[in-house]
Image 1: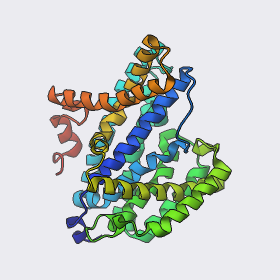
Image 2 (image 1 turned 90 degrees about the vertical axis):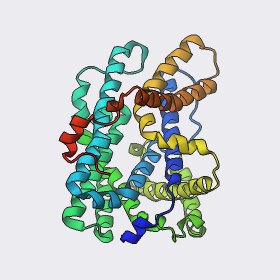
Image 3 (image 1 turned 120 degrees about the vertical axis):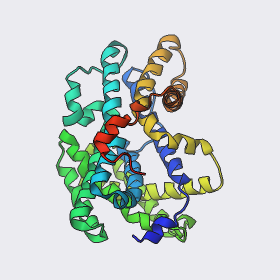
Image 4 (image 1 turned 135 degrees about the vertical axis):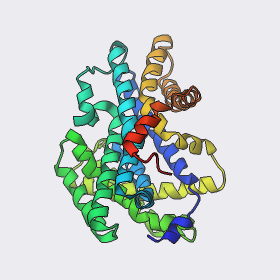
Length: 355
């Protein structure tokens, strides 16, 4: 990818739109699951595999990984990603666990102090925080392989991504996030591969011309999915054919979403998605605590409230309370909750945070 591509890029507000839509869906899933676990009779209104949303975050990260890694070099890149991903993972993962342990009688969780070990060995046990752990591992693996072996060439990256994706079907262990790393690596690589097509200003990707061919394929795949896998809600419920179909359906869906949100951003429509997306990390690390707390309060004081109304209230709280809390914490000087304090940055990054 040439330096010219890096200099002349589309404005990237659409990225935050995409993140905003996906993070709302993530909050929706967790809010819905919490209500169902609490005994509320409510049906899922969005029939898609639960893991369909997370690949988009990895694709977006892949879009910018080349320029970020090349700019910093491997060592600084690794330290920088540790600061931006693993630091909030440990801080907010610990806060999350402590709150679940202390308020266990009010929640659906039955966690103990031994779960702190799982933060290293079994990230899936720390609820939504597995994502930060996995993203860090995937980005580090990609950078290491490309700096040492592939030199950011397309063909070897594509082959390796395909191999790891297939392996993820057979390697089921979640210890050290192995299954997630194998599975999501391919989506990060896809983001890396499409960056050269969607970032340059002279790209015609967002004109939608490719939709002439892509959209019919997506529709056909959706019909096939409905006919054979309409009851599947988790990846583990899929056979090998369904697992193979999941990849093109998810990728095409992500590309269509990118075109839609680019049009929204270009016309300044539904700007709240962009605002939410710019705070997606903070929503992600905090939302489960607030969806649980709001659910308990709503069910205690308004037990006769319609389940759909409960769901909307919980989703709104899970999205907007973390944003408000983040702003309050930053004003009060609690920046160490989201990024390492200066003395720790010097230890992690040695040269300070790269610009």
